[in-house]
Length: 280
View 1 (cartoon, helix red, strand yellow):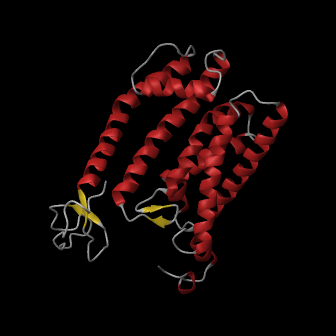
View 2: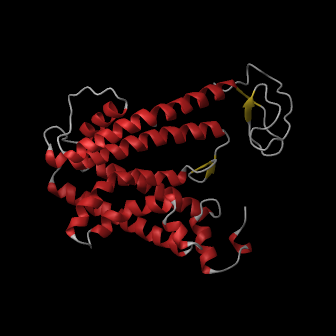
View 3: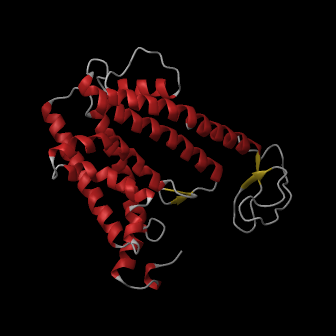
């Protein structure tokens, strides 16, 4: 790990180091805090879909605005210390971060934009993708890579359903409030639609809602079986793995008959145990 003291002491380098969870302790703390705020951000969106008093709703929206301001400051800081600013803006994480803060800045634009950007509130759950990168999770190295991949697959499935739930609720609740009353109603419809069960007891009536339903069905047919199949393969492979760490890169678990490391290709020692060391 490179210490910030040994790096070029420019303001950009120091700022980038403090925003990186793997460079400094402050960076790790800041990124965990941002992850917690991202979860709270999504929970606020869900709670606001339920019938609550005007006082509580105003209080929740104030919290929402504060979190948006924090995210905006974080976005500007990451942009300012990026060497390739255009590349950061159009990167996957940059676009996700921008979508998360868009509802705040829409309030300063034409009223027509507010309705559009309010549809994007469900995308805020995607901010957690930044913290599930590589072999790291929230700044901590995960020794079992298959376990981290399984977590990432489950997160992907949940995020897809959450985003579609938010979209269908924002579109259908104004047009069909008796059917799409709360986030749970929209979540039930999204799961039933994307798993192609389609009970038919909850149906959209607006053109936008029907278009979203078609996209949900197509996503359910194409993405969910692929993700679930990959998850099952990972789980089966992890059950067949034995504790046989690589002497070079340190990856702990490999197939029982593996002769070379699945990451770096270094020759492995012969596993000493076959049954008791299996990962269950």
